[in-house]
Amino acid sequence: MCRHLAYLGPEQPLKHLLLDPPHSLYRQSWAPRHQRNGTVNADGFGVGWYADGDPVPARYRRSGPIWADQSLLDLARVVRSGAVLAAVRDATLTGADAEAAAAPFASGRWLFSHNGAVAGWPDAAAPLVSLLPPVDVLSLQARTDSAFVWALVLHRLRSGEAAEHALAGAVRQLAEAAPASRLNLLLTDGDTVTATAWGDSLWYRAEPGHAVIVASEPYDDEPLWREVPDRTVVTASRTEVRLDPVEDLVSVSPKEPCT
Image 1 (spheres, rainbow, N blue to C red):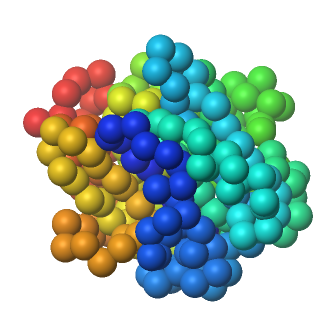
Image 2: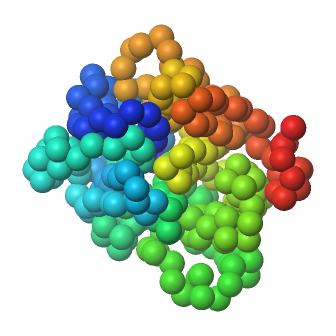
Image 3: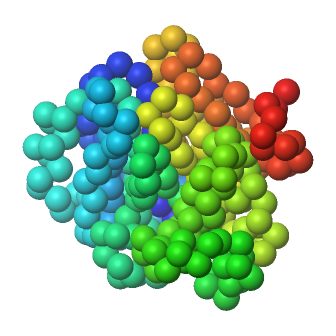
C-alpha cells in the first residue's frame, strides 16, 4: 500500500530523486521491489518541497498514476530543493476524494505521508474519533484512513509533542484499536525527517553532514542503504540518524527528551 520517500540535503532537481534512479519512486509505482501488500501504486501521487527562505512547503498532487502525468516531467526538471517528501498511492478505497487523498498531506510547515492501511477502516478507528477536537474531524483533508491518521498526528504536534513522540503515540493508538494495521508514517518540517516502520518496509541512506534519505525501499543498489527494523521510529537530519523502538518513545513523556 503506497511507497514514499523523504530527502534532506543539497539542493537538486526533483527528477534526480523521483525519476532518474534505476528503482526510483516513479518506477516503484508499477514495479516495487519490497512492497509487502499490493503490487501497483496507481491511485495518485504527490510531491512536496521547500524553497529557501519559506518554511511553508509547496505541493503538486494528482489523482492518477505518476507515469501518466506529463506535467511532472517538466516540473521535476526545473524545480530544485534540499528538502522533499513524495509518495505514490495504492488506495485503500479506490477513488475516494481524488487528489485530496494523495500524499503528502500538509499543515503549516509539516508534510506527511502514510504507507499502509488501518485494518477494518472505518469501523475500527471510530473509537479514536473522540480523541480529536470536533473541528479537526469536520475538516479532515479526505475521507480516508491516511487523512485520519494525519489528523491524529497533527493534533499531537499542535499539543506540543515532538515529532517522534507524535508518530509513536499515534501508531500505538491505532495499533491498539486496529491490531492488523500497517502504519509506516513519514513526516518532515524541512529540517528533520521522522518515520515509523510498522508492518511494511522502510530504509534509510545517510551521508552524515551531507544528505539523508528515508524511503519505503532503496531507489538504487548502492551499499549505503540500511533497512529499518519493524516497530521502529527513525529520526533523521542532515547530520545524524537515530533509531528508537516505538514502545520506548510511547513510554517517555513527550515533553522530555528521549535518552
